[in-house]
Amino acid sequence: MDRKIKVLLADDTLIAREGWKRILETASDIEIVGEARSAVETKRKVKELAPDVLLMDLLWFGDESAGWAVIREIKQEYKVKIIAVTAYENLIRDARLAGADSALLKTFSREELLMEIREQATQPEREPVMLASDTRMERLTKRELEVLNLLKDGHPDKEIANMLGIAPTTAKNHVKNILGKLSAKNRTQAVAVGQELGILR
Image 1 (cartoon, rainbow, N blue to C red):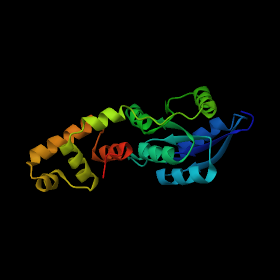
Image 2 (cartoon, rainbow, N blue to C red; image 1 turned 180 degrees about the horizontal axis):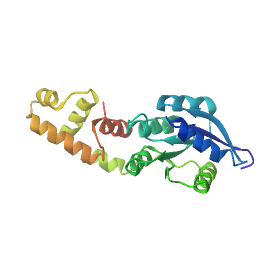
Image 3 (cartoon, helix red, strand yellow; image 1 turned 180 degrees about the vertical axis):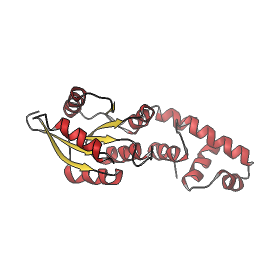
């Protein structure tokens, strides 16, 4: 591309952002348009600055779900390439499921980072990742859908059992099955996947 690649840096630690800046400032074809210090600020800056590439951390203030949650929101609203950066390999799958275009471990070299930014900036926008969403939707039973909707409203297992007239252990098993079928780590993520698939009330 003829013009410079506009990059937004998003990480909750100054040392990480400064490290990325030092690398990117050595590239004449890349322009740093801004920085974000929180997941909420990241989304706002994407709207304000319209970067070509968002370079963002996945673990925000100890919250493992904050990164992929904001990736999903950004991808639904804006055309921006997202490169997820993390020190934790286990977070990469969730980031890709949420729509991240690529992911790098924080052990990357200068050349790897610059190459990834250039590659993503020139790639056409890909379709959102909806890994086996139809089959995931079909696999949930009617009862599990009811339980998932109650999870969305924040009800614990005991309340779900009372509301549905089932034993607490049965409610707990339904939750366990839902997490497994939706490939979710916890209730919050299960609800997020359910909303993504459009299966919640």
